[in-house]
Figure (tube, rainbow, N blue to C red):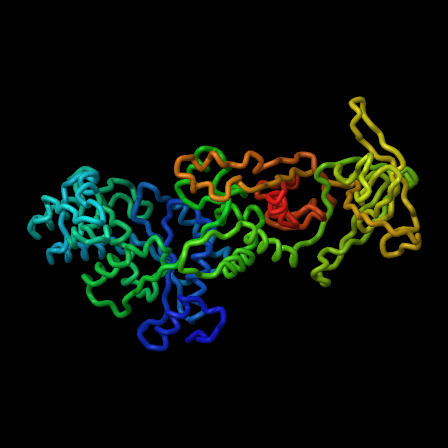
Amino acid sequence: MSHEADSPSMNFLEAIIDEDLKKGTLTDGVVTRFPPEPNGYLHIGHAKSICLNFGLGQTFGGRTHLRFDDTNPATEDTEYVEAIQQDIKWLGFDWGDHLHFASDYFEQLYDYACDLIKAGKAYVDDSTLEEIRSMRGVPTSPGQESPFRSRSAEENLDLFQRMRNGEFEEGSKVLRAKIDMSSPNMHMRDPIMYRILKKHHHRTGDKWSIYPMYDWAHGQSDAIEGISHSICTLEFEVHRPLYEWFLDQLPTFPQRPRQYEFARLNLSYTVTSKRKLNELVTSGIVNGWDDPRMPTIAGMRRRGYTAKAIRNFSERVGVARRENVIDLSLLEFSVREDLNKTTHRVMAVLDPLKVTITNYPEGQTEDLMLENTPEDPEAGSRAVPFSRNILIEHGDFMENPPRKFFRLGVGREVRLKGAYIIKCEDVVKNEAGEIVELLCTYDPNSKSGADTSGKKVKGTLHWVSEDHAIKAEVRQYDRLFKDEDPAGHKEQDFKEFLNENSLTVLEHAYLEPSLKEAKPGERFQFMRKGYYCVDLDSTPEKQIFNLTVTLKDSWAKMQKK
């Protein structure tokens, strides 16, 4: 299946694959893979890679494998394995029967390593890691060969077998490929293939005392699985000669993989280093990997981002050959764009101010019909109760408003969304002089949809009936970092740029009663406020909502001031 060669959306990877298909060089079709390490949760950068690899498989009628690079038992856990699978499925992709682990191939990789030893292309080195690093030297001058480089194949085989059997301590020996200590590419200067690690593995238990390094395991796993295009980020470009060298030493596979690199996703006001993200979690700065402020897929899902929005964002970003930084506002725009089409509009008052409509009959309640989603006529409408006592936002009233303030002030009129026009007659203050209540009147002839009052007002406010509203906790989220590149300051800790206002908890928000049965994960637009998602910790007894994204890019406005 060939992609349309003249497609305006074709990126350079698609062009490469299209050409390979035309040449007929792919004996098993297009086979890509997504190879995460199970040592943390996936983040937005991984989401782009997932969309790219699975997307290529779909576009060209091939398949995509999910293969866990589980070669470091010191940092891996089944929790991460399960979370990664959940994230990929949530994004809308399926690996079918092709769930694999590098540990599936440990025995085969060991046999291949023995073959390299027999061919005189690998040796056991007793040098320490510091000594190995020192002997490698610098790219501009040749490195120094290890004194153990000349060991015989027989001795190396014996030592390697004993390494596997657990006879030696961690750090006492490694297996290195014998390539070229004078190569300008440091990765070709006798790279380490195996190290001794006496750690419990989440799948193989205590069977192994040695574990393969990424550069050794990755390419061989690709070859074993018949991967056609091994798509990596740019930092692996210098690893490609080693990837090819290792493949040259192996038996011929029906379909030899080729490595290609693309620019990783760098997002402003964000860190995506797993080490740094783990530091945020373990230090308690955030509340776990799925904290809604985290750039993890789990965090974005909990915050209310949709899988479609993330896929659309990845498509907008595109596939580049050079590193660049994508503005976080583009991701937020993609989320906002998707939610605008699908979420019901509801009313929620986050900073309540009481309004008493003095001429509305006491004890009377009427149901007003409000549309659910203007973007979707088939979404229907809902009944919202209206009564004498309502709540509006504190910010929607000013005692002495300026001329262009089109909300409520003493002697001024506004329309209540879907209801009536009201006029503020007076204010009630507490002993501290703070306004605690507005006394208003309403025009019974101004009902929305049946207005015969002839009045025209510029302001429309959202509101909730005090007697019917449900109380909720609302978590207002902002960007986790104040600096555009928090990890880019070499002499400063990235945590110095944390935004101290990244989370504000509003414990006295009031929502219209239709939200009483809202389930965790459901999303809504709070009129004039933003898009919100019911948090996973929410219960019928205590509703909790997370701010997903504001209605507009308020951050950009703040930066311009």
